[in-house]
Amino acid sequence: MKGFRFYEELYFKNRKGENSQDNIIALFVPEQRCPDGSYECLASLFSTPNSIVCNMAVSPGYLETDARWVSEAKARSIHPKLFEYLD
Image (tube, rainbow, N blue to C red; front, side, top):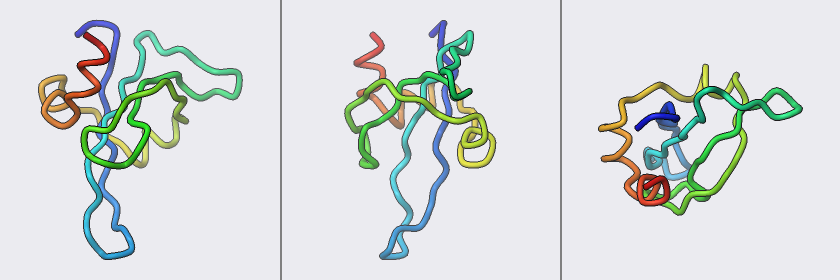
């Protein structure tokens, strides 16, 4: 899909010691910066699997430390509602 770069948010431990669910960040390409330097993106509203999607902003530092680039195919398998929104 042209116009987006996909990032998987990395796992973290919740209070019960379990891994949280994957979420995908769809970064607009070319990057669109907010006045504070963050990037405009589409991301899940909640930290549950296949959550609804909304417009958000993400800092470059967050993408570097807490997310990793993934292919569109992997992003589709993790977050189908994101692609329902995009399609």
